[in-house]
Length: 271
Image (tube, rainbow, N blue to C red; front, side, top):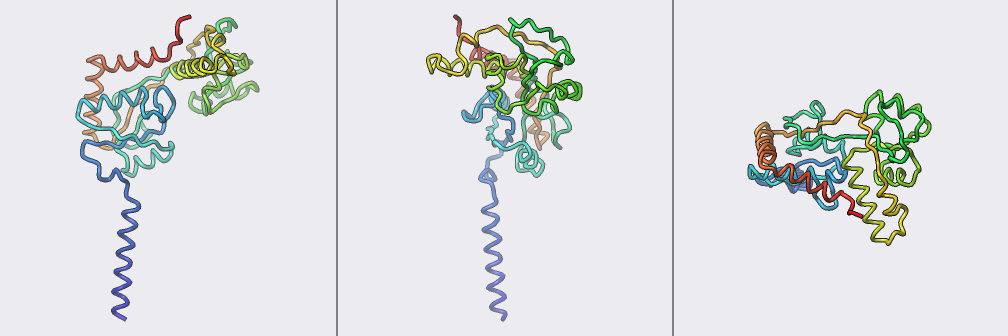
């Protein structure tokens, strides 16, 4: 009987060790200068997951490079990103506002600027949120929640308002005259317009929207306040190191060079 009990205890111990090894993350053995950063926001040009780069990832990497860190991106859904950060599985997360997670917040890293965008030839008067009433509007997913109650009150009573998950579809709808207005962040709009342009060129104009349409002039109606985002870290020291690196690349021009390179990449070629 004693021998059987010893065997059972031995088997239990082995199973416990096996479970720990299965559950352990391969990043548990990362070095002291390797940081696992949660990336839940994957919208180009800020984050381009399939290429493991993007404007924000370059800022993240270059700021930490100043202090000798290596960034290991972990692409996860939003809820899981926050859970993994809260339980200590991640060293940091990007694109948060103060109060969203329990951590040490960086200086402001990036500012998003949403616009109501229309075709210039339509000559639409949009000077306030209320001017969106009665117009056909396509916004990004969850815009009615993200952009605040005043925006929601106007658009949710509008039968010609819709939200789409694929933001390239917003650009198609605008240039195909399917909607009068799209609500998008400026750089995201420019990225997808250039992406669609390149698709049309590659298909020799046999695409759902062609180069000529995509060259039509647009008007940016500035009716939304800017949205400032920070990064959050478990460690105050890591946060301080990131802030120092961020200030360094701002001072030496590397931050502005990243923004400028992406701006040039998103510009349409001259006619």
